[in-house]
Image (cartoon, rainbow, N blue to C red; front, top):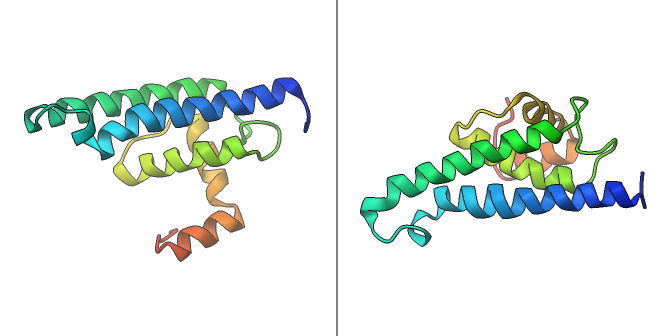
Length: 125
């Protein structure tokens, strides 16, 4: 419900975790490995660490998600934050846990998501 302090806190908490941990610590190591590795010999170890952070992060998020779909009872900005890292995971072959996968599929059904992805050149079949 809008204006619900507990709900607002949950939205902010999830966004912070997704952006700071899954994106900022995990995917950053995967996509910008050179920022975390001292030399090329360390690249694979850094990418592996990033994959581990991402996978563990999705488990944490999954355990707090409603099996019905969205982060809260209705769509919020936290759903958008979660979607973009789920999208990245899908594109590089990282399996999503059950509730995250339900959330990802629900988001893919939103007309605006479909439109943006098509505009960006992604196939949705």
